[in-house]
Image (cartoon, rainbow, N blue to C red; front, side, top):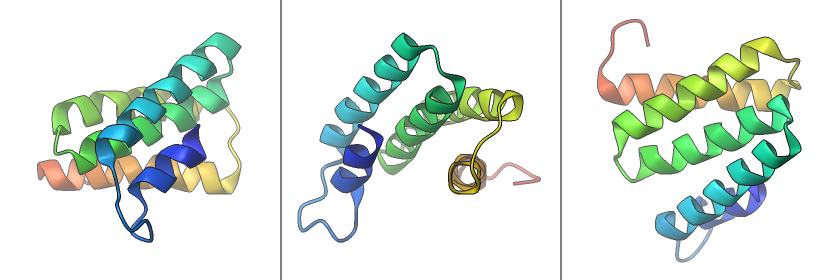
Length: 101
């Protein structure tokens, strides 16, 4: 579901659909929660935060991204996921104009 979320947002997609990506991201979060797997939860929450960032829903994006970051810090992530979680959080803070982003 996470990869499908990214496909809906991709600049290579001739018709990116952030609203559809949001629905897909929510499904990814529910699935990760059902699996009770913090690594997948962090990735799914970060993907949903990225969609909210794209939709300019910054406070919701920050909240989800912070949860993803907290989970990320408690688990071992592969480099690609680690970079995605950290970059998403930075991008949200940067858009909000928060110092230290």
